[in-house]
Length: 312
Image 1 (cartoon, helix red, strand yellow):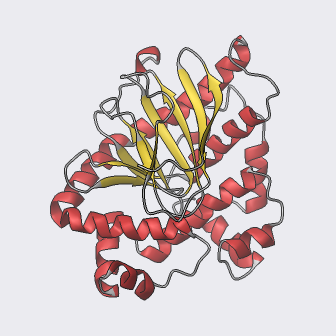
Image 2: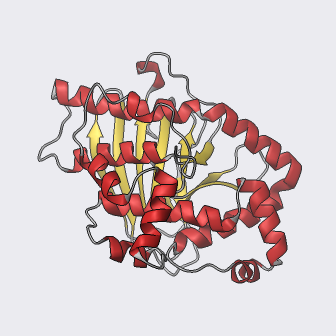
């Protein structure tokens, strides 16, 4: 595999967990770029990968599809049986954050036996970005500082627990969809999702995506919904809102620019779509991300979490 401009930044490390960013500048080369996520040195580690740009892929674990694919709209949970490397491909920029922990050091946490990908809930993404922002703003490493270390661990473990709680239904749904529709359906929906994630701000007309894949628009619409549980245009909206949350967390303050870059017709169109998916306007979400970490709030902030588009 060709290695591109890949870099990893360690954000946090303790006896129980590791948090690290990985970024790649992208390339026009068709080869995939492989990297070893944080925590791979432990055969027992559970790893939660939050893809912030591009797609993250692993080999399929159920023999149903060639890959399990994560993008900004879907989280990736790697079980203890997973090998060391994951990969990304495509010409665009790639960014992800990995939270890896040893379940043996976390009471009541059982490592899932298989890898799984599932929708990224808005509250989970907001909590993740708050945690990452907290780590990026530190002027010195937190490990070794007992109270500061405990605060980060509480929030990170809460995120992983929420992911593991989603595992059983996600795994069963993946098996049933795979047996019913087969690996070819998985490959088509995977390829469509890669195309969306490479340029979430583009229009992505259904006939153009289908033509690129060499199938009819009606067939693509059918197989994508069968595999993902929603039509492509709704999936693209979730993807755009997940990317918008990352931009807000990274300091973007011009919402009109964010709206334009992500393919929305206007600031008001973006705000309405964001509220429908997240349950609050972009400005309020930014305030939530910027709110300091709280030891009392860690568990409550992701309780009752729902996928984007299901906000009450």
